[in-house]
Image (cartoon, rainbow, N blue to C red; front, side, top):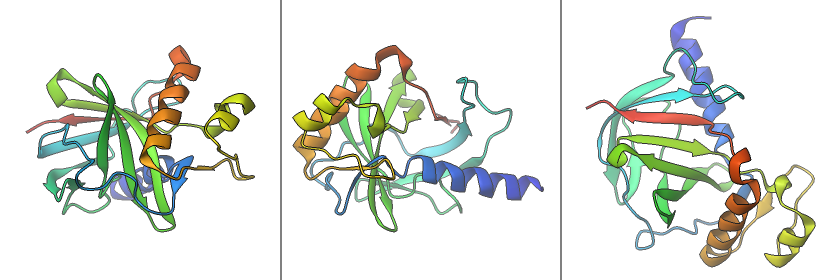
Length: 178
């Protein structure tokens, strides 16, 4: 497999990873509700292995700009094209990623004054029945939970972080290089 094919495959796989176990039909983080936690510039992306170690090579590099509070790139295969963010806590953000069939949500952390971003794809299946009931969520057969509004999304992702605590995995890392 060529390096370009590996990059495209890696970027495509990562877009699916952050496509969301928590989903909605419409975007819940609109223009006015979104935050801009990361500066424009050249960013490099590395996925991580299940043990948390980063791959030995980057899978994407390119200029990222803000356009209507969405992170975009003219470089092909940007894994998180059109992402918007909403602050959930100190240096913790909800990442909203548009998909062909709706919207997915992940969790991102900001480090080194916004020069490093790590992210995690939450797994709705890790929530107990008690938590699912408390947030009126249903785990569908494919492992997805549909959220209906921003308040519910913020609350359930906060509960998710509390529930998984130290067991959380990092699915990928971005670093600003320019």
